[in-house]
Length: 157
Image 1 (cartoon, helix red, strand yellow):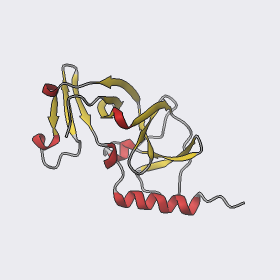
Image 2 (tube, helix red, strand yellow):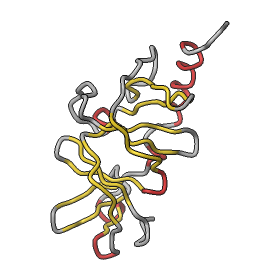
Image 3 (cartoon, helix red, strand yellow):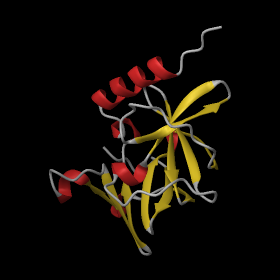
């Protein structure tokens, strides 16, 4: 359920605006070099080291069924915490924080039962699709990613 008091972080990919709950966002950083992981799910571009932790980079374009493109130097990583792990979402840019009012919000269930986004923020300057960070990796993708990490990222002295 989207609540009026929930702030969201808005970001853009291919001139389409998206958002996730600000409560799960750790920080936004410039894109870094990503190390591909063999046998990882297609939604994962690879990983990078973030203060000693291996962080998977989510291919947002793949997840959102958009044309793929490599990570560019001007892209940003939105570091977000899920109940299972920290993720990095690749975006063209972070647009800022919004505190939506209840009259601007439309629940996904009010649009279509098959609508993938959690909801829609309707603003004077356009529409922002709000997603649930917990839904970016399916249970199977999470298992497949962990298996790929376990197989290819072991350190044995």
